[in-house]
Image (cartoon, rainbow, N blue to C red; front, side, top):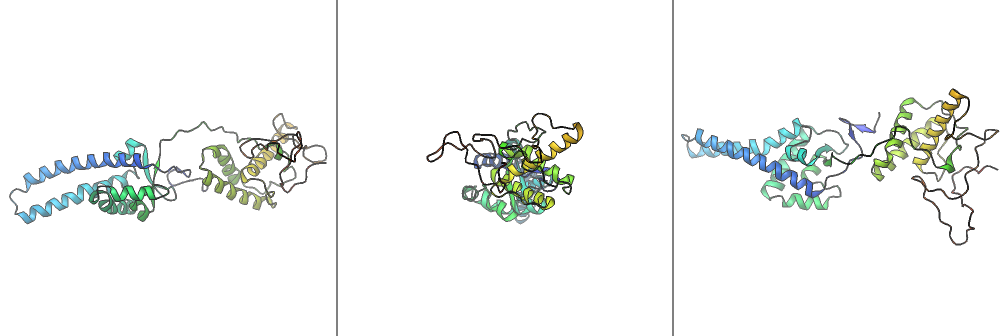
Length: 302
């Protein structure tokens, strides 16, 4: 499905975790790690009672590094970014591109975490997370990772993409869609059915990229001034209309049909308010009942 989902099916609409949830996850991880460290230390003290002081110090340092540093690194590597604390809080560590982390990412996070979490009691990590736009601590910055929320409210996504704005219905009746591959249609449909769940900045970038790819396949650029999402919805709707017309011989209700002569029906009177274009209020210098049409690069029908 190209670039809409990367790695282990990690969605691109990443939602960075907030500082309180991250702090709670770290506290839970530290409680577990310290409990294991205390148990291991008691066992080592009993096992190394006959050794000299230097050997006991060396064993203590090794146990500290193994449990409090190596343990979290191993857990994050094997669980692909889900430690016990993060699992309890619904968080996960991913790469900047949305993919799962590997050993080197966990190693850098763990090594830097010794300084910014253990040695400074988390003060440096909290300050860095508050300063960062996406709530990343220094370990995330050096490792190229991001802690995101996994348990987020998900709306039911309709399988059928949303209809285009009425002022664009039927505008692409003459567009050649034969060169558009099925993979690109699938990407566009995936975007349109999930567009309300995407982060606005990420969703806008996706729409622009898909619009450029679609325009390159059709050989006709997108109309100037038309939002990329509205352009994609209108072209997909036109393709569906053609498929229905080929199957049934006529477009049923809900599908735009071109007027005789291949020209689209006129735009509906009155302002249009939807996800692609907000309604235009009647302002000074404009006559009530008349709509000031946006510049789309297409001349309105006679």
